[in-house]
Length: 116
Length: 114
Picture (cartoon, each protein chain N blue to C red):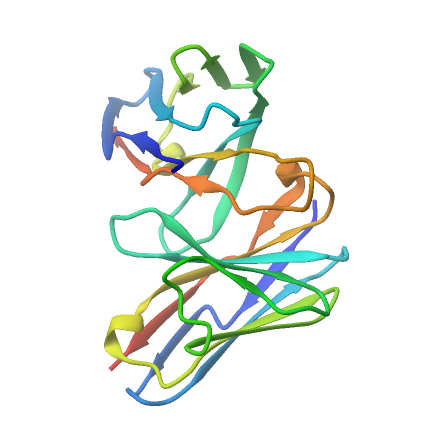
């Protein structure tokens, strides 16, 4: 099946630094990619939807200047957490849509971000 | 707004059947999904069902949908230790346009007793 590669799987950084997370669709073109954030013992929350070549659509309450999303090609989307703080520590997961329906929605393996 | 509810924990004995329940509020939901998440890993799509179906079976997995009550369940037959994970119910109110994100429940942690 289709594979979505997410990198890095784990990152520890100092408060105030920026962290970039990559999400790649390896064997299909992803016109749409989604970024989710998972809090401990809580559900996955959709942060933003990115379409190739256009600006991302952010969900209510998500700071677009804090979480920069770039979807420069049909196989790559990046999420940059700028000036990270401890409250940004979380598990971030991307997913990519290979077709018109979410039936073909594949997830990356996630990135555990820990901000010290 | 949309809301998906599921129990946080379920404990079953190895070899028994596990039934994980989920309720949702959005009556326009078209696709309903079950995902499995193992510790530290991403999500694995287990199965999905269209809202015009009542039941779907796939090997050890059986999905039942009661659209009137907005209730979805996932039954895992002959539960094994490898089934230990968090199971997420998710719904997608397909609007016919672009691709929208899913709404997830909080996840049910399935615990297997030997």
